[in-house]
Amino acid sequence: MIAVLCVTAGCETTSDWLKDFTNEQDEAIILGAPGAGSYLSDMYNLAVSDRATQAEIFAKAEAAATLTPGTMTNLRFALVLATPGHPGTNAVKAQSMLRELLSQPDLMTPGEIALATIHLQEVEQRLMLDAETERLRAANTRAATTEEAAVEAAMARGLADLEAENRRLRQSLTDAESKLDALSAIERSLREQSSNGETP
Image (cartoon, rainbow, N blue to C red; front, side, top):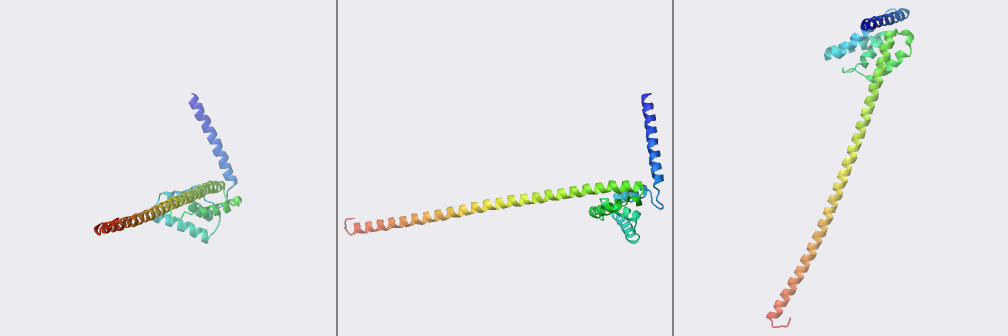
């Protein structure tokens, strides 16, 4: 019984909301303005179609906005630009166009305003995420470069230390050889003196 009452109340609330929305739509009719479904159709086809169909949708929207600029054609092209997943997507240009359209809401239906507002927010969020991603990538690159430089500096210091140690060892070897040569010369001299009967 409770469930039936809830469903009935929900239906009445939904019905009232739809009536209010329909009344608003009726009050804001703009001759020749397409319904929201027309815009959504292009966006859906962009999301699910192959590259050739995506290119065709993009070309038609761009041509219409260029040849017959107006609220409808500009909004359609802006939404195409805002839709990700196809080669023609351009969030920056979509943001600019959507802002410009929303600066003149009197020329748009409530459905068009809703679409433009929703997709402007989505595009701005995407641009913020892209900027943050780029910042993190740059920071990571700087960190990697710094670490690489530190490793190279440590290797250079290690190499310099090894070279200094090698020089020290070569000098020690030279000194030892000189001492050995001197001892050998003394030994030869002593043997010669002994063989000549001289007192060493």
